Length: 432
Image (tube, rainbow, N blue to C red; front, side, top):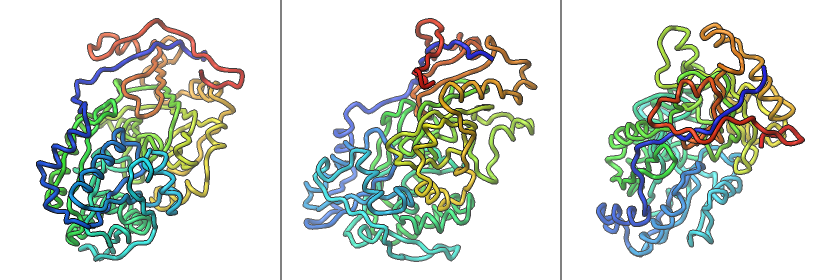
């Protein structure tokens, strides 16, 4: 099959957006009366995870200013489980890639993998907190509320996860992940209750992003309100999620994958593949006649490159069908396997078919189509459904083939830009 021509597409989302994030945070902090929880001289730990949250730098900067205003001494804690190769140096390196440095924030970063046991859950599992954080006078947890890449629940990735898998470092991550999806669904909230009972958490800052990856909503929470409030904010995050505009796609080409984009390099919710035993993917639901449940059904996924901010961590690459040699050469197996083994989801570390370059990868995907042919008939360059996105943080911008154009051309939330054009590749076969 020849590679079909594509056309540029822009999808529009009617979601709110905070224009002045630092002023918004200051107003929320004042309303919350954070000053009443910080005494002069208090050491205050602030958690920062490994994800590329759009406004994380201005949020942390302003939070540091506010704490100092009240006489406190803030410092940063890398709260990211086993990421960064499970080392203190590696986690500090990840923070640097996000713009979180001591010079930039005017506050120290205390990175360590050492933890202190603070109790046990009702399931008799231990609960740990980063040593530096526990020795502080107070902890402020900061995180984005969003869908998790491994499971579906009433609350998934947010402050509860930050208080447990994040703040508890690799040791806590190993405990919770050792129970698989059940552990994520049950031990995260259970362990978070133990952490809250230490009274070390003095506030939570919840971030909700819109479909374009910008901050749509920000809230400063009382620790006791976090478990229930996170459920409400999670519903808001789902509403703002940037779902792809189609239900079926033959070939999805992702230019860039990486840990700074998603915990599994590519957002499993966007691509419709979780790769977790016990959690049904859309393909299985479709075959069982149960519909798509909001997730797309994609037959072939081609991943072209791994971001430098991933530092070789390619966990989740097993969700693709084809990768390129240049991506494969950037994988650090030691760092990747450390993350994969900690999660216990070994499929996420499997290496897909390796193409010589982008051109060969896309051709293999197109010429190996078979599953969706039985549903939609014979595929050719006129009706094949090809989509190209920069990453799973696509922000509504993509290129689609004529097969998807016919399906989407009448939608009012989509604008097509220019005319159809042929994809261009350089001398090495890399997509331009």
